[in-house]
Image (tube, rainbow, N blue to C red; front, side, top):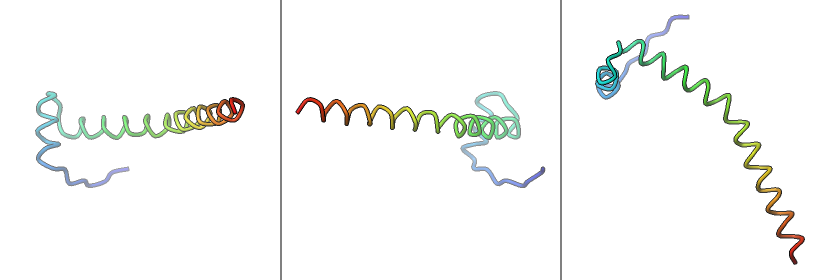
Length: 62
């Protein structure tokens, strides 16, 4: 798929600072975002399990 994206001067500068063409930098941001979005449910599940354990331990200490 091909799309048109307008990027800020800040993004262009960041790509240049990393020695990357803007397209490569944007693609790396997209790839990183995909990885993060796939990992996030695992983090959310872990946080919920920790909260549940805290609730159980608070209830048993009373």
